[in-house]
Picture 1 (tube, rainbow, N blue to C red):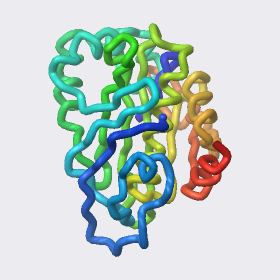
Picture 2: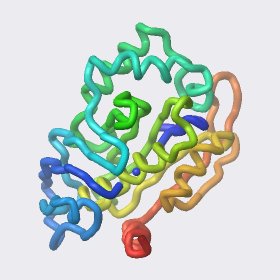
Picture 3: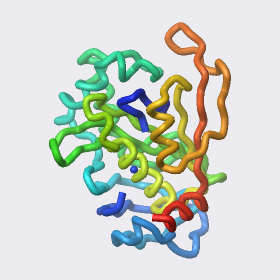
Picture 4: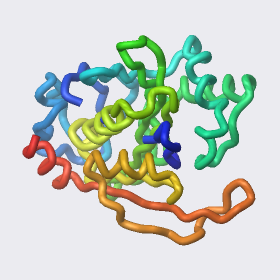
Length: 238
């Protein structure tokens, strides 16, 4: 998922996260300490676990939950905007396209195979509306790696909501799933998304020149990443 513009594509302190975990790989000794354990998640952490059903994650201001058909109006409000789609692979969506996207996202509730996305609707409690989406993609079981991405409604930009939601995804990936490395990417012109990834502790590892041909033009791509030990060191500083 290429993260989106100043609305931002692509974070938590309190959570009710209790994913169902399963794996064919050997179990790690124990769950890592951190926000999940502090919130009562004490399940085994494996190298490449499986989430069979996404649970709700609660942060200081947000509820991250699976999408449902009732989210259409909120989803369409931002997926229909050209400024949201500007740096993404898809164009601004009409109502039919947004309904198809919502149907697909409603089904992205499991993480049981490499290449799959686990997607959450981001609800801001203050307005009780879906203000964006955030997710994790399982890249590699062997190398214990994943990817995060996010898209947010520009009407709610500037409040740190994307940062809060994206940080929750890192917590899920590292503390919940035991991943070793998580990456994120964005169009190099998408400065707002790059700043979100920097704020949650990700490093820019690569700047690929004109490696994306999107919407009739060549674009640069930025790759950000963070390791599990870097995540743990970040938690110790808080």
